[in-house]
Length: 113
Ligand SMILES: [Zn+2]
Image (cartoon, rainbow, N blue to C red):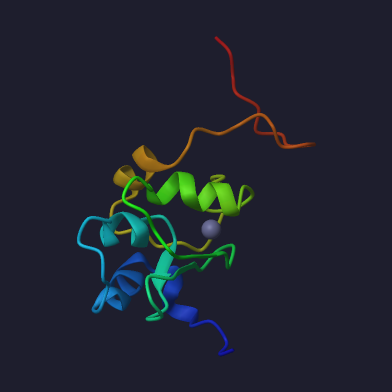
């Protein structure tokens, strides 16, 4: 296994890995935005931030819920501080799940007004 490419903290660089992406119905822009780069094996993508690999995508699958299902503590999806360089941080903010309160010992509880 090769050492992970250090530049994949940049969304722009992740998006470039999808040249041979096989599924036109699964948004490579969304995958790249949410941490995934393409491994060039089948339809397997890998998250730079939590190193989870997800493949065998089905038509109903969505990038973020699948990512969370296999890696519920991904720092990017959990809105932890990462070295991610998003193309559009507002777009990323819209697709990330809300900060959740189900992490033991976390300080990032939802503020109730
Ligand atoms: Zn991840």
